[in-house]
Length: 441
Ligand code: ASP
Ligand code: MG
Image (cartoon, rainbow, N blue to C red):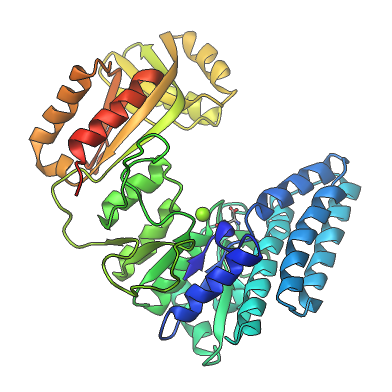
């Protein structure tokens, strides 16, 4: 059972989370993120410190968030205060040396999860459910040395299994998400949002019945409800479909969560920790979104929209590798690509300031057109792979609603279709496509 930052964001969220944990029968392992917002605060404190600006105010905010919880549940704060003291010392050191290495940054960020695990274990114990905080490495999660985006070692299944054998029975383990350690003993992080991935690694190694990701939405929705008010919960998804949706930016799930789960053949379930009745309807298919490898239906499952992208049309022959080289050098990640022998179209986030430089460099050997204010519509579903009439319907709906389609691309999995259109038209298209492709169940 993995609980994200908002699910343990304050006293009432933690209380609800404790209820969900207590309601789950049988052996369980809990994985937690830092309290919501804490990782960002720690990052910002570290940047302030290295630039010799005030970091103490931010540090105080972090400490106040933690204090509110240990006071509310009357948890002994000894260990937490020790960790906070180490945190303060690290920031002092960073300010003094004016140096912040990736290794030190990971160690500093680890404090968010190390403290939240102690808070949640303390709250559970205080409510009559004996629990114990465990740092990820004490449960065998070892990684390589890529600080900031460390890769678990190939042997984690064995090291986690061996460490888990020593866990005391009848005590709920509350493990830090997001973190690992190198064999040489340095703390690492798995990349932002990585606690979901941690949960899947532990679940897969232990052969659990189900990997549960508890979050602030009730599951995957078939569209963003702020764009399509009629958006509905998707009860089941295939692993492939979930990966596409996760990568496209439905922030519900870290995309890498699926890898270990699928390899071990373990279903992943997304659940809302703010749902009214904790633990109600246990295990039933009507609970959240269940992701597994049972045959997907030949339909469309979900739509997603990404706003604020630039499209680049580059006219020159045979130069895809050269272009990709330029963009990689400027740290730009390409979202959608469509290519022919003589031209390439691709999309980028508007926020990237490196884009101008990359365009200037490309203009030296090719004709480049930049179109701002575009949006990407992504359509996901097994049906795209198997039912050609769905493509016809998608384009008919676009035509009927005067939605210009500038770029089209279908990923290698063939179960997603990506279209680039104008910002305003995209909003119209989302509503029309949802109505046509995802009629009420
Ligand atoms: N606390 C980490 C983050 O904010 C990891 C996570 O939330 O999954 O990125
Ligand atoms: Mg998350």
